Image 1 (cartoon, rainbow, N blue to C red):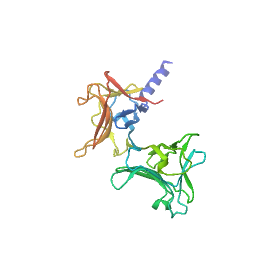
Image 2 (cartoon, rainbow, N blue to C red):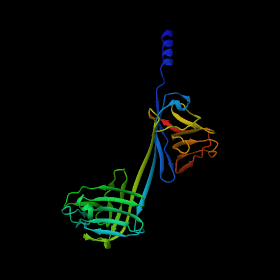
Image 3 (cartoon, one colour):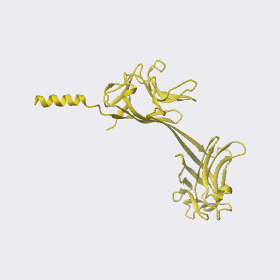
Image 4 (cartoon, rainbow, N blue to C red):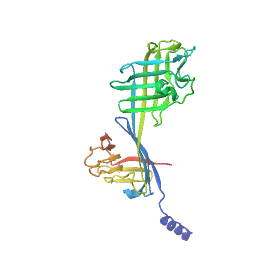
Amino acid sequence: MKTTLLCSLLLAATLPAQATEFQIEPIALPGGISIFGTLTTDGTVGPLTAANLTAWHVTVRRTTVYRYDPTNPGGAQASGVHISPDGRRMTVKASPDGVRDGGILAFGSFGPGPEYGVQVANFTGYYAGTGGMAFYLAGPAFEWVWFNAPNGSTRLVAKAAPGSSVFTLVPVVFDSGATLTGRITTDGSVGPIGPAQLLDWRIAAKSVDDTVYIKTADGSNSSVLPASNGFSTDGVTLSVARPGGYLGFGVPPAPPRRGAGAVLADFSDAAPRKGQAGYFDAFGLQYKPLHFGGTMYPVAHALP
């Protein structure tokens, strides 16, 4: 019995530690930036170094919302727009033959001068022969999606509840993952409508841009940032020590390159006394205070 127990203990001591995957506690920063993801250790329990981090997948997500309403210059454009007899469906006509104009439903300014607007559906001009499209425009921010609608068809763009004159847009999803949503208020008319029947609109284009840091074999994507130190795990929680600890992933600065990265926790001498977390790139940095007064700040938890 003693021999069997001793053999078991010796075997356990010689087995390699099992990798542990941790879910990062999401970080929400001002300006629509969020940080989330996972990291994996080699299973070591206790103090860690960069060498113990065998994988990571850290996403920095920038969410930008462009809003369009009657306060923007340009007003509404509407032709070939129709409200169903029951008042519940708003549609825009496609080109009848791919040559002649179809309809358009748009809001805002598209030049000359400052351009800031959204085209919910456009089957006019060049777009008559392409099956129509939608786009949003906010200065340099611009994205479009093709509808490829058949000639002679109609496109459903918004729906209203029975008895309501507030129409909710059918969401438009762009290739980048950006979405167009919102509502349009009419005067309650049915049949063909024009700009005069559009009393209000509150439309938003939500754009999402992800920067993802992962570990690659050649290290070309990112690394554990050189300042990282003072982090450890008990096998369940991965924590960063206060004071002095730091943990981040990204592209280290290499003058003249400033680098970029996601910092999960920073309790270094350069940080506020109670720590900070955030993101930096060549254009600046965004941090938020952690308000942590303890000794080991939890940044991630082991996945089941």
